[in-house]
Image 1 (tube, rainbow, N blue to C red):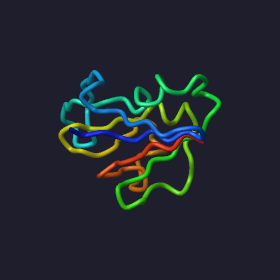
Image 2 (cartoon, helix red, strand yellow):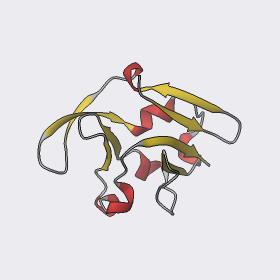
Image 3 (tube, rainbow, N blue to C red):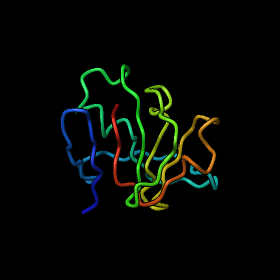
Image 4 (tube, one colour):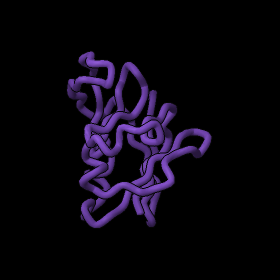
Amino acid sequence: HRKFDVITPDTTTFVELRKLTPTSVTNLNGQMEDALLLQDFVAMLVATPDNQQYNLRTLDDFGPSSDLTWAQFQTGYWLLTSETTMFTDPALNSGKYKLKVLEKILVK
């Protein structure tokens, strides 16, 4: 069972990937792939998600140095076959936002 931890200032909650409904997206290689919206991991846990900043961390605590706004975070996906993050916002297609072994979503 695969899960991500969603860490807010008040609590840490794990969300199992199998509990969310996948959608199909075109990955960065131009292929259709099942994916989970990153926003779905926090939408059920955060009352006002647009007032927060977001950061992604891998198993070894690697992640982008800059936080994401809610608008930016909403463009993010976890690709189920590629097992990596992908963002549809062109400004977030750089390597620092393409993470494997995603472990945590930090809500600040």
